[in-house]
Length: 237
Image (cartoon, rainbow, N blue to C red; front, side, top):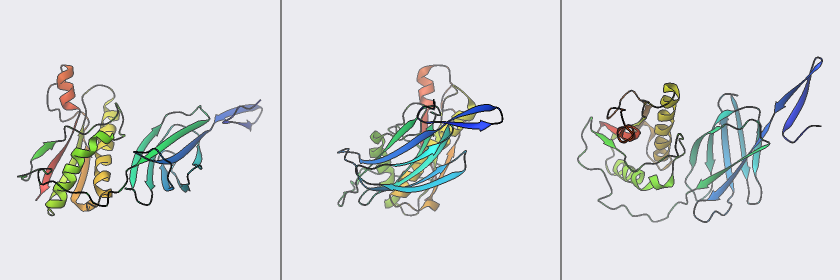
């Protein structure tokens, strides 16, 4: 008997069981949680596949995954900021994996306060973004980060010649290769946030440094917290 999400393939005299996961996408307004029409472009990194599709309220867009993989998901919806997410889908044995794209609505009139910018910036200045948050061991950006990222956005809009590098850093806990990848993807997500809101891509660089540039010794939890950070460096102004 074949269970849902399980494909049985004949290979000589043996039966080879291959688990298939249906990856399901829906887009929601982040405030109201109402479903909204959206279009998607998905790159499946390890499998080297790409998918395009759309969903409507009451409908979903879905495709199949045969193994754990990393997905780069670009979601667009009319009246909302475009969004790019990097998502590791670790579940290669369950039948369904649903992901909700929480979309931020474009505000028609959004004032920029003069004190919501970084001032007196000079080349080689490094500014730590203390109020940027991700889920633990994840590069999913939490919405509590938006106010500080919007301050950086306002700064870039105000100073049109400003060029910066976004840098991600970690402590020394865990696999160094995974830490480097985590830091790079966090920097990339922030860079995409700024590009999607109108900053020219050539004004932004991103880099992950993992645990190679600690701000403090990794000898206690307080210092490790200092090392788990995102910052930007002024390259030109």
